[in-house]
Amino acid sequence: MITTEEIVNVLLLIAIALISARIFGYLFYRLKQPAVLGEIIAGIVVGGIGLYYLHGQEILIFGGSLTLPNLDFHATINSDMFSFVAQLGILFLLFISGLEISVSKLKKMGKTSLFVAIGGVILPFALGFISCFLLNGFNNFSFAVNECIIVGLILTATSVGVTVRCLMDIDALDTDVGATILGSAVFDDIIAILLLAFVLGIGSIMGTIMLGVRIAIFFFLFLYIGLKIIDKILDLGEKIHLPKAFLSISLAILLIYTFFADKAGISGIIGAFVAGVLIGQNVRSVKVEADTKAIAYGFFVPLFFVWVGASLWQNSDYLASSASSIVILASVIIIVAVVGKVIGCGLGAKIAGMTYRQSLQVGVGMIPRMELALIIVSAAISKDILTGNIASKILIVTVILTIVTTLISPLLIRATFKNTS
Figure (spheres, rainbow, N blue to C red):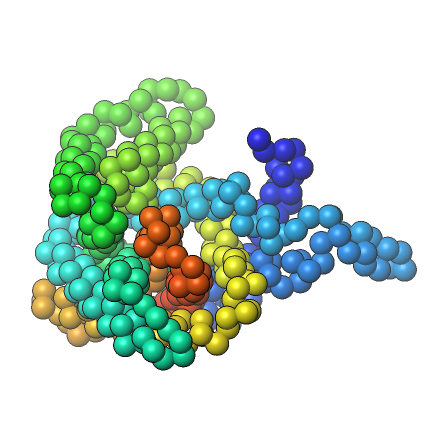
């Protein structure tokens, strides 16, 4: 049962996280860098440096003394309650991206997105598997085949939350490149989830087939049929003469789609994106978009990126005791993760007919890893595919991978879109 003290601690931390996110975000904005980088740095600071060591300490202020709240910010920021609130940020971010993208553009770039997704799965998986296999015997590394497979799977997953945020900031989301990245991310996640189901042995081949059927049913019911009836549902918001009723109906659809996407075996953020796409086709969606952005960017989205930065401090004790081997493994994995997506996705885009520059932009936009990568490694640990020290190392390296790819992606996206009209 959640205690009142735990709730108050989380509320205090949310306040500190929001203030920190805005301060660091503004500093990076003044440096002409993406504000999202500042928010992630704020998470690293709040999660591990300063407040982590100051809780319950007495400090001197204006000649008097003040005892800081006796709580562990490091533990609180990694609590289930704070994580839940923060992860709503990624749902809102993908929902907004769906609102801003057009169905016609998604259809137009469908073939290209599929090519990009296939390239972005095959090459990163192969590079991850081969890298782990070649590391055997070096610096006492010892990877079994199934462990190499899991590392390969971790590298297939893409999280476009950071990319979406950056593309929004430079008004490039509703472009061929933006639509390709979003469509590719959906295909990418589906392929990764199906591969994970097969590797984990969820009902073997038949279980994987059934998972594919559930995914197909989800898209048929909630995308195809949703396009037919979404306007009628949204009309309820107009008929209910209460403040922000249209927004309430839209947010309810967002949460319902997230729930059923998760139950279908897909990442919930795909459901949020689909809900945004459907509502975005309604002529009154501009009202929802403005209100949703106020909620998202004023509260949930900054908290999400602070939480991402703070996650670096998870398993910090083991990180310190095995620093050398973790640095080696993380360096290899990060390099192949970036190269795999840039070349694999870029090659898929080029084969589908995009220009070299557009192909590079797509490849860079597909670099970030986050929630699905962590889900894959967590599932592998729970199924005892990853055990012991190897499990801890791969988990920590995955967290580092999400942080590093999240940090470098905005810089690379800004660079590849520079001077683009």
